[in-house]
Length: 227
Ligand code: URA
Image (cartoon, rainbow, N blue to C red; front, side, top):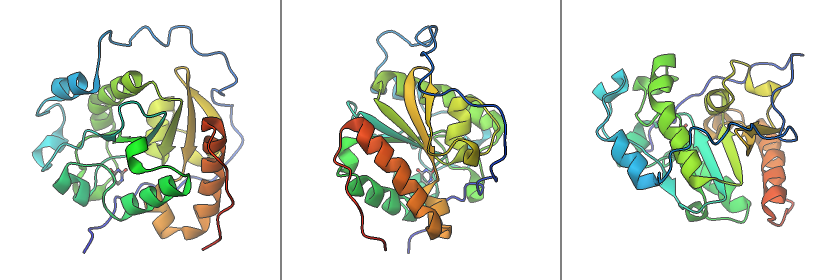
């Protein structure tokens, strides 16, 4: 039996508020200043080590660093490992992961073509959302992973990933489906697959978002049969 997928917070309703950085805005001139010369994924993993930087280490089984192609043009960033991921040490292998795999394949790609990682590398107990201190301790490793990968597009799955990269508390509904800028990288926030498992009606919105990503990556945009 697959274990319960983590439950990211339901998206907050949209309201009018100031715009977030759009991809059309010139990239931050200082975006490259904290890139670490010579960094590679194995170096980032080695620096993470058998991490004890936050309290999540006390309850985790396996660190879930990330998985996929080191030359991926597309990176998916989730929130944090759930029970299946914690047991296997791999991201998105539970129920939400199966849906993510279907989404990737619907885009005409395979999981091995992309890179998948999370904001926090250890499972929050009971699949709760990661807390501020946990995100602060772990996100520098995500930022380094992204700087090593230098993807063409980053897709944030759910509010935690998007809020961490954008350094905002605003709800995902404010900026979902729009092109955003994360330190010079094109970024799109969409709903988390675990949210889609609970709210299948939102799948259409996610597919629209992924079609924008496909167009950006030069992938053939196909019409999917509604399920
Ligand atoms: N949800 C996430 O955010 N990440 C995973 O790896 C699995 C489920």
